[in-house]
Length: 581
Image (cartoon, rainbow, N blue to C red):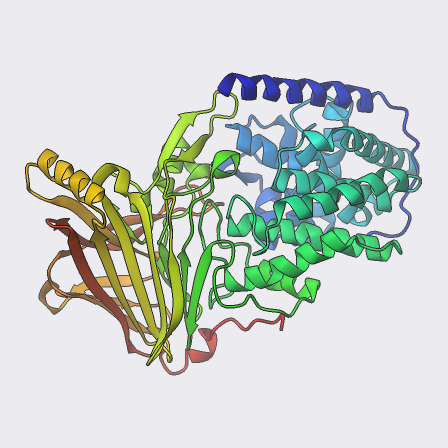
């Protein structure tokens, strides 16, 4: 299997290079746009100022070189290099928007054409080309203002060459987000450039097919990555807007995919307006989720149940999001985490309980650590995760998630004073004969959360396996930890003589964690892994440690709000309103 994938990867690389060289030699006509393009992407003013100051922060690495040509930098890794050639940084310079930002944008873009425009370099892949075309077209008016005809001709000619390459190689993009990027870029360029509409029509049909194949009935992706779903949703709304502006109808499969994704994203939206951080995804750029939902103008919400495998309990100003399904498998699992039954809790605008997040930008060791069960707010057996990492792919350096839970039953309903989630998974059955079952309850006012975690041996076969695990442990019990990772801004202290943990939020709220007393309670160091930072942020985690000595072990715990938001601060820490409704 690995040899087949290796051959396929080499074939894709060869075809990309061959078509890139052909496109680079193409005598494309230097014509303009059908109409004045409007920017659809959102950049960061702060990041733009950093770029102008010579601080190049990409993929977790910072290179400092004032007045440098961005293409003279030596990328420390492939992710850094891809971010350069994808040109998403152009959004940040456009957000600054002054003359110096325009001059630098123009200088770096024309330098790219000079160095790589003939089909050379690592930027000639379908997904990067699609991403680059969208940025170039979005900010064309910003960059072309004041340029003379020869420079404009160089710009338009390169756009045509890249569009020609993309029309030949979009099929070479990996399924999922990379292919959506490639097809959206092709549609965007084909409809924006004069005389290129012919290349857009096949891409429109292909994008509709991808929507039908990749977006499931719950409005989710095979990767189950919330941030990736938001990126795909944004691309689909851009493509639909471009088709509408061009006077063309959007295929039904395309529109239906948007209609399915929007309610799922609302389910994955915490009370503070951010996304739940699961399976390699981050919180999303501030305001991005609400902006994308507003642009789509889809008002429906997901019915009760799961959305892309996640469950949401929301009451008062508190939201809980739980990973309540089997983890991704196969190629879609290369960024997936062993996070089944892990949860996140947000109160108003303040995250409380979180997962550590993706360590991809901090190197392979952090990447693996972030994917393990102990990096999530759930139960883990000592030394074991609920899923394992497969062998490293020699071509990509990535590892698929294997041997994960195969059975994850869940039930969501009402109780007398609130909402209840019940779920379980068999990820520890093959190794220890134990099923992890978790119950979460939240009161209608959102001020109280009660939890119960159980380890159970259900069948005779599982009991025999548990007995063997006990023998291996010399009858000392199967050690487990239930972890509650806290956001870095939560100030936590052991209270009540070690029986509880008090947590103060920046808003002035105070939450208290208690448990039934049968386990050891400790407050330990943790990390918060966040894309765009140079190193992990220090944080704390509440850990309940115990041992399973029999076929049934039960741990009860609770989170309760002891103090409301401080008067005078309340307006600043209210729930982020859903402006899309």
